[in-house]
Image (cartoon, rainbow over all chains, first blue to last red):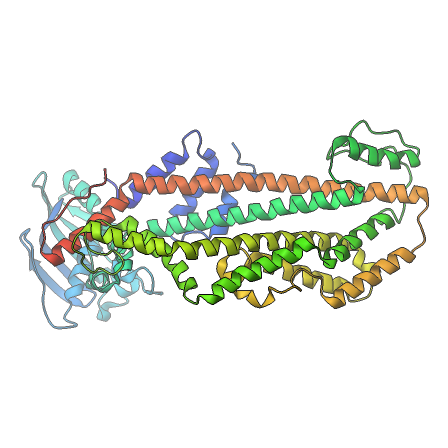
Length: 57
Length: 513
């Protein structure tokens, strides 16, 4: 049994992993950022979601 | 689920040594202020989670369990501060004693070691909302009606989910904003290249023709086509110091900015239209307030679940009457919202002109060094001001803030700067004509620079577009996940139960599937 927060996040990452979601590496990096005690700044999230840094696939 | 049979608290918070036999029953702790009532809740919270909710979160600064968990007489001895809970698993009936010490807060011992009890404790640990402090409950009770949903989330320890939603939404806005900037840079790069080639559009044939005309002057073979990575001077052996300056092109760049400042009927109409719609806003001083109310009423309608107004908590005869009232109120705001739409539409036309001016200023910038001493700085300062103004005109508040600048001077180059630009034109015109070969070589060098700029701008725009799509997808997936977990339903149900409790009415279940 997991907390509501865990359930929501698990469902979120599952949706991101769907074929029309995000590349696996990008999702993993986002997951790492959202698991930290302190949430990242929006700019850091944008950098992670950027297709410019070689994580397109 | 677990039940507490007994709790033993030693040197923890304000309690020296306390044992309570709770017998798996409900219980009440009472006593005067400062007698340690909250300490009992803290002890249970700590025993189950290894943390004390009251000592974490906003406003708690550098307070920590390690430093502030032990009794004040044992502040430097966290090993002395411990809590033991005798718990019973309601499913199996198994009992065990859970002991946790402040010094090693992340671990606990269980005696006897029973898998069923450990699993039950883990389940409880995953639900920190099981222990609520007096402060948390009072904050919920005294919260304004419109802030109650936030407080429910805080009580259920779901604030982080809300924070993540805000974070992803903000990331989405920032990505979209960056995308607009890169798209604008592409338009600017296209404009600069067209002007340099003296073409009205970048058709493949016309670009190749303009380039080959200069290559012919240099005795070079014509290029079959010009792509964004084609070397325009390929085959040329000679290097020239003046190759980066092309007189005719420089004059066209500066002249474009001077011409822009001369104004056109379209520009005058754009400013005049914006001033006109702002006058309508001025005539009704309540318009701004009504516009701001629109979103609130819309949200209120969405939150309507019973006969209590979700905005002010006042009871109504029935839900239909309340819904009708809110809908009528919403309709009354329509006129104000239409005015807002017209203001932003008019502002968007002015924004396009301002972006055009920034493009011209950017192209004229490199030539400023040939003109009056202050020209370079003047041009840079003006361009920065235009960029700020363009951003401001994106929102109603921004347009209203810039109200004083919406005059016929808005789309004109400042007098001093205009004078210096005209002087620059004179200086450029007075320069001796370049020989045919120097003209051709410098033309191709500048063209190469501008093609490179366009290529980089398009690549950045493509990346920004993909990033924006990723950010949009991420936010949407998050919202779907939250909705999928019926979180909104949970929050609405909690609010409904609160109201039912206050009114002494039977509780109704959430109707959302």
